[in-house]
Image (cartoon, rainbow, N blue to C red; front, side, top):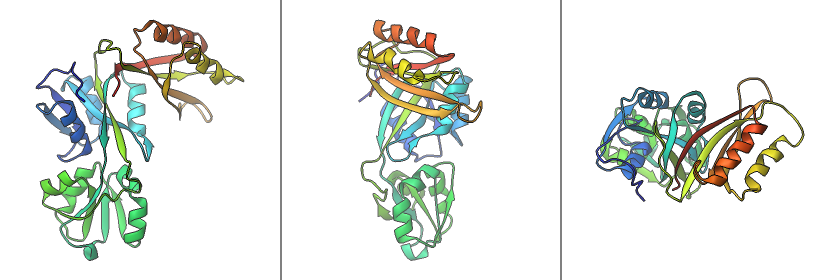
Length: 276
């Protein structure tokens, strides 16, 4: 499914080097885009803020390992909007220059290592694991040493000249990563949208969260996600990240946001965008 409001031939910032799952997401968004690779997610965000790219693509959650904290923090801290979302199926492979018997070190992004925990424990109990900035960075490093193996995509194997020692090695076959598109402009309503917000209640009182959720329930607004995350203001103080169906310009969503604003000491709308 394409996000049709995107202008073709854009420049997309994403995590590199070539062969990442972020690249798969970018290709789903616009196969004709020029891709600009960065070493870490913070650099992708900063490139959008500086308008060095037309938009950025970053992972926000995985179906096995949950949310990506760096992305959630960036949405809180920066004046940036979610302008789209992309769902990418993830199938990890074990890649190496050598054979299974040669492997002494397994490299990958922390999320990928976690997603393949059972495979590593079963087949490489005594191998050392090492984290890298991305799965494709792991593949690039692995291409230099036969005793190393990388957990990465099939595309990475082809790009870096590696053997696929095992495929589909994630612990659960149904493995998906949700990526978000970051930009400065809000897309117009399509009739099939999602709105994301961050809420800080600010005061600990019985029924505070119940009252908050009531603003949605009373207007028949479906929540697709609600997650608490430390506010970093003190132990036991939390922010709520909430995704809901509807666009912030829809009357019922607008009314709910106004109601929440009276209950919370902070509310930040981080995007209304077409729902995938």
